[in-house]
Image (cartoon, rainbow, N blue to C red; front, side, top):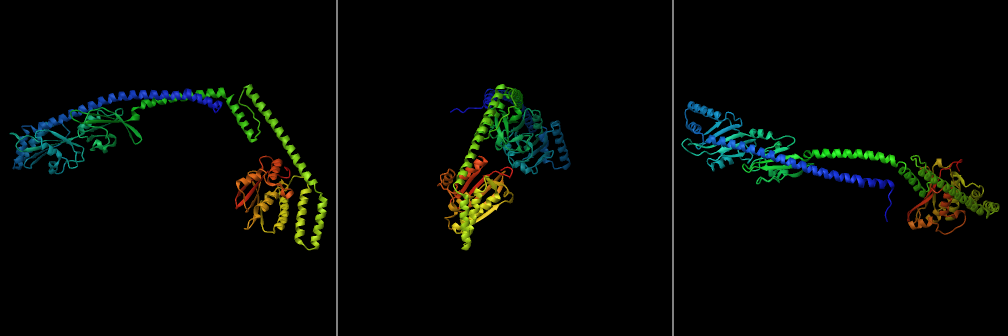
Length: 593
């Protein structure tokens, strides 16, 4: 079965299907295409930058190697160093030192990147041009640079000081170059020349290529060790140790950018590896920064969409306020009819004659229904009064009073106090039944009649139960339907506590709650099941006659007939534990009864 939709829901659904969804689909497609163009242009740009940076680094490395080779083959310098090794005279040794220093100053006059040059002789002598950063000469001979150079005579080799914790100057940001010169006529004693190069020369190259639009550049040597990085914590680490860089391979020059989710951000990572030096340039940029133009376009489109929506809403409000809102008000009011809320509607938000006529017709229908209900209730009350009159007419009250007075006198003569007391209580109950034509009496009077009734029942059942009355003082002067509590108490005695062996009690409570007068009669008797409660409320109990045997359902009917459908009673019970009957009655003063 197809479920019908309201006019407003159909209108909103159509708007979403025909406008909102297509707009978002188009926005997503446009953003995706534009994002692809941005990334493609960025890849081309950053590849050119990384190739150029890698080329400049190669040139600088070749220049360093060239100067290193020049020193190892300097035919004037090495003889001076060799003579310095063997010179015993301190003055001549100092003069030789100054000549060597002058020669090196001349060779590296404009090369501020040289931190130190150290010459090691095969006999253990060491000449130092500027103070090196290492502490012990023996550390140099233990380094991997020294061992590799000694195994490759005449070949210039370089390493970073991060390769091993055993390498000299480990932990400093310096570039180490070494060479083991060949022994010949101008070099008979120098076995190893050690160079400390400041990485400032690489940083100066690096700084020319970095800016906010490019991203963060990282440079790693041929072994994957990070030489330059804006993040100082990465210096010296191998790229395989960095989580978001471990996908990069130094062994080929594949330009394969990729995304990596790092914490809450997405990083876009590119790399270029030189075929000659084997050094790798890595670029990292925040993907949001890369695609910020796409985000701006999205914001503009959303702003346009919001403005369009606002205009559409204003148009819809102006166009539909005369139809949808009045109809919804009418529908909501009509829904209350099934809950017996017969309310009129006043339509003020429309200028349409048809809607106004619909509201007027509905109001007329409500008036007719109210008139019919009032007529029905009047007939029910009249019928109830006639039934009570018929019951009263069946018994001649004068005859009953005279008879009871005779019994009372006989009991007094015989000194039978119990008989006298029961007779007196019974006479008071009869007087309550016949003396007044009014349906309502005060709660105080009702409790007095109930006290007379319980006196009779205690004589009948041997005074083996207790009655506890707990009624608030502000309730006692209110009005209640006459003899409405007696049938409930009667059922509690006869059907509730009569057959139990434990202590028997009945509690009667009266109080005000939520604008209503509430009475509760609770016993600790045999209780009832849910099915038994339903049977009682559905009038399936045995028929009985006499004022003290009016059924629970009769009590409920009297309340509804005299007070309205919102009042009545309810039963709560648990088998072999308790039964609680709650009577719900309107608050009636003497003027309102």
